[in-house]
Length: 149
Length: 149
DNA sequence: TTTAAATCTCTAATTACTATAGATTCTAGG
DNA sequence: CCTAGAATCTATAGTAATTAGAGATTTAAA
Picture 1 (cartoon, rainbow over the protein chains, first blue to last red):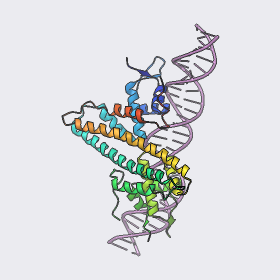
Picture 2: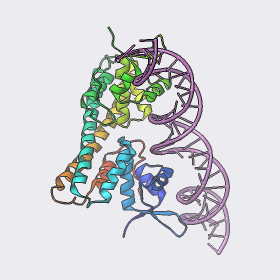
Picture 3: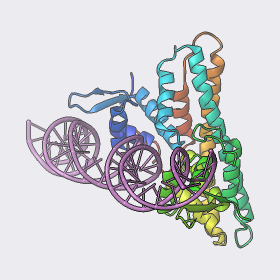
Picture 4: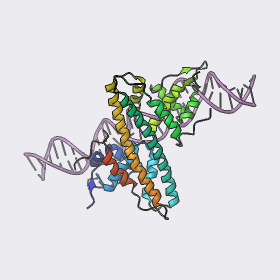
């Protein structure tokens, strides 16, 4: 017995707004679900998992193109290995870069909080820390690499 | 001798598009730089660091409101400790959640890549993994918590 | 000095949602 | 069965955050 959900349940489960769910269907990120006799959308747990995935990728800041690529990957589990590993490896690199940057941010917040035991915040260095760390770690395509200067 | 930059240099250094830099100035995320005699913007390294920070926060998926709050924090290093720690702690929690989710994604990619030694990709489980992990880890305000059902 | 590259301002378009309006359908109580 | 309120439906408009384009001006290298 496959579990079934209304659009509202999907929205509550994932935190995604109802119009957004319909929007994802329209742009093809979500497969069209079957309809009830009265024409309401009826989803199953695969839809739910896929939507949760989309929502979390979005929260993690992945661009829609990347999300689409990831979904395509899982939609065609028998694509040739070379193609898949290449894409997967690229995303893995991106994920590692994000983790590195978030870790830098994390320790900076921890320093801030620790420094706060006195009455006032010491000189805050989040900006410099993140800006510097980023330039060291970041190899994203959106960064054409620091120019010589 | 403070280093100075044109808007184009800033763009190349940070990967941020030129119109976006001007847009950030317009909405107040970036301070208005001084102008040259010919009216072109002249930035210093503080601008550069701040812009790099904004860009990386954006890439990491932080909403603009959060970015603004972080910048405000650093703009007023003598805010009362309670206020700062509260905000910093909230962001730290968010950062930790992101790291947890990214780590889950990371290991799933690693599994995929490892499974790829044969000719075809094994059953791919990124969606389920991220969807499940997310629901376990995620406490974000955008998720009003899974409904009983 | 001149001419190609870079900036300037301003407006329009794009992307990714999000909200609204009016009609229809579902669902629990009488 | 019947009905009122909640939930859905479609379709269109609006918003937020960029991004692109047009035409004028400025800067910088040959």
